[in-house]
Image 1 (cartoon, rainbow, N blue to C red):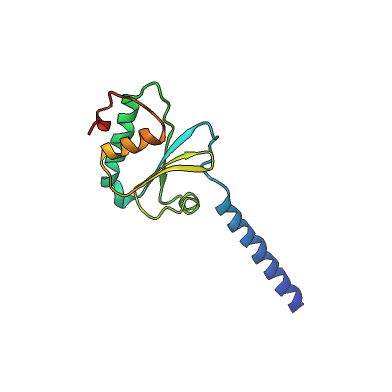
Image 2: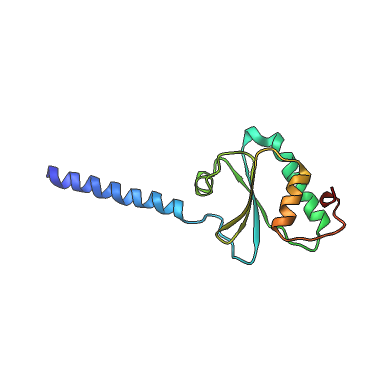
Length: 134
């Protein structure tokens, strides 16, 4: 009887462990490879530093109205997504394409820096864009 109980506990542990590891290997924000998804990882302590990210994304929509900019906010409470992308710094902005991470911007940055990095990553070219003229 004791041997059966040990076997039952061990098999339950192994099955549960298998569920944990599969969660970490499945992309929770999967997109197809033809579309970029911009994701901002946010927490309560970084709200003030996130303003430049929001300003940059709004400016991108204003400057390039013909482009589609899918955007998503992931909060620190969404632990499976945070673990999958190994986010340790807030705010963090990522540009994803399929399973590929095309851009990572961590911590405090100016609106202009963010726009420059996004336009380069998204391959948007606008000669009139003042942020590129330094």
